[in-house]
Each structure stands twice: as C-alpha cells, then as structure tokens.
Amino acid sequence: YPLVLRLNKLKEIMGYVTMHGIDVPNSKVWDSLIGTAIFNLFYSVGPWKRSSVFFLLSGKENLATSLYILITALDVLVSADGMITGALLFSNREPGIFATETMCTIWGILSFCFLEMSIFLVMVLSVTRTLSILSPFTMISKKVVFTVILLYLTLQLGTDLFLLGTSTEYVYSDVVPSCFLHNKKTTV
Image 1 (cartoon, rainbow, N blue to C red):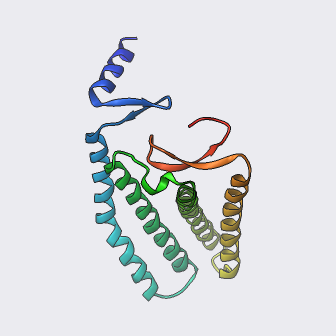
Image 2 (image 1 turned 90 degrees about the vertical axis):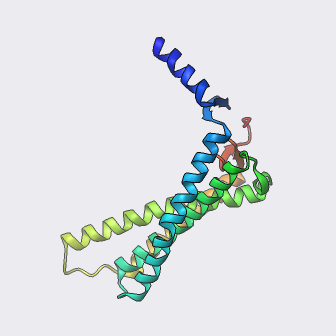
Image 3 (image 1 turned 120 degrees about the vertical axis):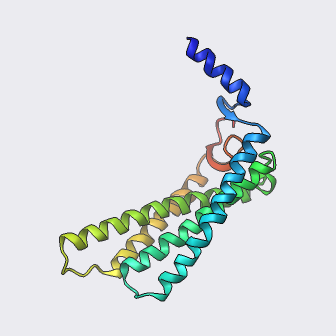
C-alpha cells in the first residue's frame, strides 16, 4: 500500500494524466523529450540506414543481399513513420490531418504493414540462413522466397481490408499519437 501511494505521488509529480483508463506522461516536457529522442534517433541512424541500402545495391546480387535491402528499406520507412509520431508529440498530440478517417486509415495500415513486414523479413532471412547452414549445397530459390513474401503481404493487406469491411475502423489515439484499429461498437 505505501508503494502504491509513492508511485501515485511520483506520477503526479512527473505530470502523468489518465487518458481512457491509461496513465500517460502528458506534459509538454515529456512530449518534447520523447519527440526530441525520436528526431535524434532518426537523424543519427537514418543516414546510415539509407547509405547501407546504396552499399548493398552496389554489391553482389543474391538472396541474402536482396533480403537485407528490403529489411533496410523497410527500417527507413519505419523510421520515417516514427518521425510523424515525433511531430505529433510536438503539436500537443493534436491529430492534424489524421483527424480524417481516410488519412488515419492510410497511416494505420501503412504503419502496421511496415512493422509487420520488417519482422517477417527478418524471420525469412533467419530461416534461409538456417537452411543454408543445415544444407550448404542446396540452392534456395529466390523466386520461392519472394513469392512467400508477396503472399504474406497480400494476406496482411487483405486482412486489414477485410477488418475495415466489418465493424472496425482506424481512429486516432492521443494516448500514443498514432492511428489504431478500433471496434466501432466501443467508445474511444
């Protein structure tokens, strides 16, 4: 019990506020710190990611290199998506253009698509590397691997579009400034 009181006092001092039942650091100081950290990460890591894409493009073309290029390109897109979140933190978490359902839907689908595809591609790279180690003289078909990637992307986008056809929609959340899939029957 005393620990709970101390945590509540700490939240009060640090500027926490309850939004939709979730304790969130909602002050200009916190938002500025988090937004600055996001921008610093993008500007310090971003150029290295972009230059690594060009380096990989100039090298020998094989399955691993192609997967590294895709993973790195998606990481650049995920970083750019993070910049949007950082910008929203500097604007008092106001939705701006994401107040419209269309823009929120586009951003929500792209954000999760970039993240999920990045994770899936790392898994594909790991599986192909494992197969190469287990069976070093077997050639892994680039065509098969990219067909699997395309099928996963189609499944992912198809699922999002199917869910949008049901009782869900993308809505802007000021708790974590982003657009999330939400059930229309409940309140935000």
